[in-house]
Structure formats: structure tokens, C-alpha cells
Length: 84
Image 1 (cartoon, helix red, strand yellow):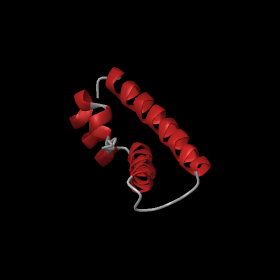
Image 2 (cartoon, one colour; image 1 turned 180 degrees about the vertical axis):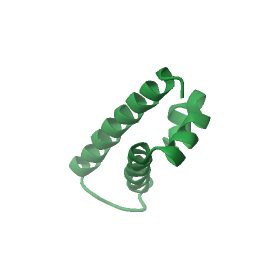
Image 3 (tube, helix red, strand yellow; image 1 turned 90 degrees about the vertical axis):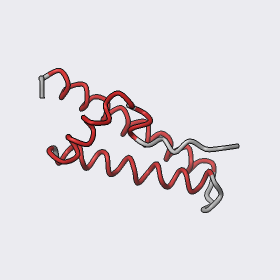
Image 4 (cartoon, helix red, strand yellow; image 1 turned 60 degrees about the vertical axis):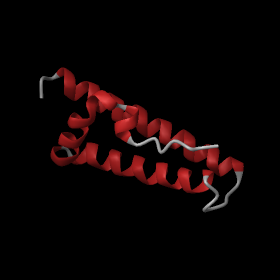
């Protein structure tokens, strides 16, 4: 079964330029994006069986990814509504 990479531009395809701009200009957003990419990469390695772990740890990572995604979405929305 193929696994999606869940890149930020896949999650928010209509905001790809905004994501790149905010990564360059907003340290807090850049940290959230980096953390998301790190967690997402670990999940992908586990799902593709490059790394092994418990199901519980994988679920913990997936919940963390969702929290980061929610945070990123909030930042994108807030930034998009301020006209920047």
C-alpha cells in the first residue's frame, strides 16, 4: 500500500507560496514547519518499514503531526487574514 508523504504543500496546496514565504520570514512558523517535517519523516520511515517501533509510538507521532498541522493551519489563516 503506497504511503502519502503528507508534505505541507500536499496538505495546503493553495497556500504553497504563503508557506515558503512564511518559512523565510517567520521564525515561529519555520520552527513549526520544521518540526512537522521531522515528525512526518519519522512516520513515513516507520510506515515504509525502514524503521520499526510499537503501534503506540506510531499513534503518538501521528497525533503530534496532527497537532502541528493544526498549529500551522492556524498560523496560515491568521497570516492570510492580516493581508500579509
